[in-house]
Image (cartoon, rainbow, N blue to C red; front, side, top):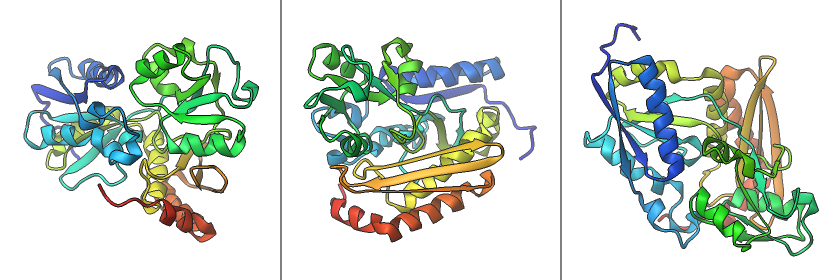
Length: 316
C-alpha cells in the first residue's frame, strides 16, 4: 500500500462506555493524535447489549459478540470510522464488510489473583469462594483447586472489585491488563503464571476495526500495528476458530515469540475441570495461523470434539 494516502481531517472512534473501554479508546485517540496532530479525533460512546444484561453469564446470552454488534452498526452507517475492541472480546470470525485494521502491542496477558485476605490461590482454605466470569478460568481453577468454590462474577472491573470488598468472595480473578490500564495494578495480589492460568485468546491486546472498503484507514492505522502481537494473536484466534471458540467453551490459547520462534499453547476443558486436553506447538511466527489450525485439529483428535459437542448450546 502506498504511503501517500490522504490523512483524514476527522476520525470518530466508536467505543463501549465502560471505564475500561473508554480508557482503550482514549489510548488509541492519544496515539493517533501524536501521529496526526492535524486530524480531529473524537470518541462516540455507546452502551451495548452486553453492558445492559448484567444478571446472566455471557455464555448464556450469546457471548462476547454482544459487546461488538452496536459498534459495528455505527461503522456501517457512518457514525464512526473505527472501533476499538479488547481482542479477547472479538468474535473469532470478523463479519463480512469489516476488517481488523490493526492489532496493537500487547499489555500483560496474564490473569490476576485479587484478594484482600489471602496472598495466593494456593493459600485459600477449602470452601473459599472465588469469583470469575469466564468458563476458561473456572475450568482451570476447578482442575487445580477442586477444594475451592467457584462462583460467577459479572459487571465491570469496578463492580467486581466492589463485590470482593463487600466480602461476597474470598478472591476474584481478573485480567491483569484491565487492572493495569485502569491504574488499579495495586489491587493485584498475585499475577498467575500462564502455566497456572492459560490466558484467553487475544488477552491484553487491542484491535482496531473498520469497514473493509476503507483502505485509507488501514494505512492511517499502520503505525499502531504491532507485528509480533498480531502474529501471536492470529495463531491463538486460528486455534479458537477451528474449535468454535466462544464464551460457551472453556478454552484458552496463548502464543509468545522468543528467540525468533512462536510458541503456542492451548487447552479445552470440561467446565468442572475434570477433563483437560492441552497441546503445544513451536514454529515460525509467520506460520502462526497454520500452527493454530493444526493444534486445534490435534486437540480434536485427543477428544476435544466430545467436550465441545457436550457443551454446544443452540445458537442465540
